Length: 145
Image (cartoon, rainbow, N blue to C red; front, side, top):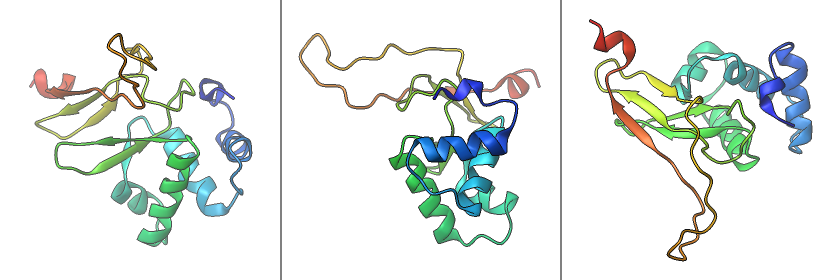
């Protein structure tokens, strides 16, 4: 199931995505997945904990870990070594787009409009298991200030 069709009913789509990936539909998983699906930017563990009060840190960590294991979400490391999590709108299980980190305000963005080639084997015979590209600089808002 491609995630780009996930715009109309987040609750229904989150429920279906969990089922499609073999995860039980718990209230906590649905809450965190709905938050990730509705977010316009990748969220840190702390962001999620603040936006959904009452969840303990271990539970959030376990849910995010299960999303990574089932290829529901991907994680992005920032310059300060904090992981941020996002659901890829194209439905790919690997990083199919680069990520941008603003050095001034710290904003993290998935550059979903920029597609990366998917390689399984390089010309030199290396087997590519994961690819990630991070771009660092000034976001649009900071560059125009």
